[in-house]
Length: 238
Length: 107
Image 1: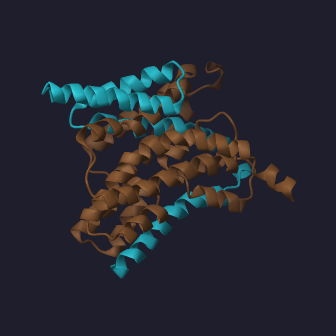
Image 2 (image 1 turned 60 degrees about the vertical axis):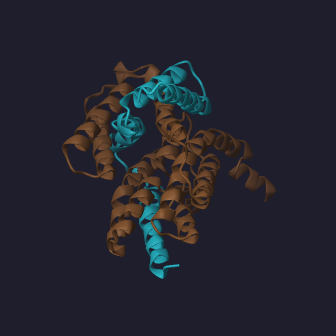
Image 3 (image 1 turned 60 degrees about the horizontal axis):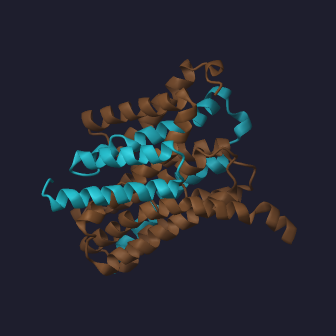
């Protein structure tokens, strides 16, 4: 039994995920802190604020929820908006599914909770099959940071100094760039995929009233499908 | 506490978790055609492009903060730094830039 557990859940993989997830945890600190602060000024209790971070774990929709709560919208609109903003996770989960190792379904269901833009990006750009142990390590430190700093922001009740807001706001973008560059160095296909999605997303964002959730899904699908149609594998041996 | 908000939060949690869980539990990878598998393989890199732009340009009122931050991250990543180092370098550089801008009233 011990052997079976150790084989199914290798600790080194968990630690590796945890260590890599530190970059997300750092990026989440100022975002979660500010969320907690805004939640307080929106009239939520500490219990409600923590409940949202603990149960939802999706930054963009939590922020939007605060705006909607302050505007006094109803429950149905709140839940519908959350669904729309987070629908891109459906695509991310499908992509992870394509790359996941043969873990039991219940383990996959559990670690799917940790799928965010950030954890997805790290897991999906790795070289190996995605293992449950790695996902739990990656997700748990990101999740811990998100929940703890939501509470800290709420309790402190004062905004971050401007210089910290300005500098720490770059963290998650730096993370995404840090994931993209190593792959782009070795593959023109990666460069094209990212560039096309970026251009389409800019167009949709500035030229339409579409919400971020939809623009990201559409940009990603347009780019992924287009490249899949026109790219010949032989020309990308690197 | 307002009872209604807690149940709204439960609803938000449900509509967030279900899309995350369904593909991982319901997909039978063997049944998916090669073209679709190829598209799914492309998704991580495409979505990184969409997550970076235009957000990085608009995350701060001063467009240069985004540009300088992006350049710092790019350089660190290009030379093989780990993710934590890349994130910390970008924060430190922007902290210094922010301090200089503020100190000399350049903002």
